View: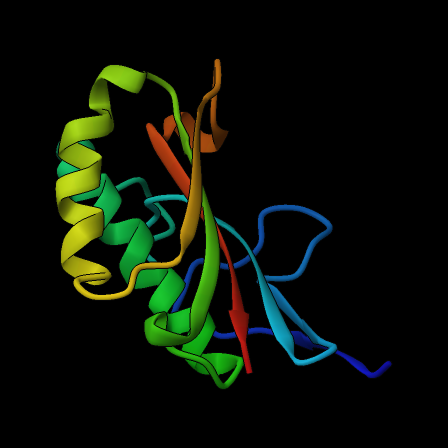
Length: 126
């Protein structure tokens, strides 16, 4: 099986020893994106809605760099530091996946990098 790492400057750089995404076996495995502004490397201002939008925009850029789109996403995992943020996150998420959304798991975690309230990872077909 061939394996290729994906990197784009249009999304935040990896902040550790991992790739933004890896393309392998007909799939693109995208690392979790947090709401960092790719231009500044800083967490975006605002609440869960603004953070979710930035995360999904970052994810779009990683997908594009790997030859995929949001329409080709088959599975996401959403990590929230507070499940009471779910309705607001879900409303924003739904605007990015308006029809035939991917499979999804959502879990609450105690902390996320950089003080983020949301992180989303994805698997897409390529």
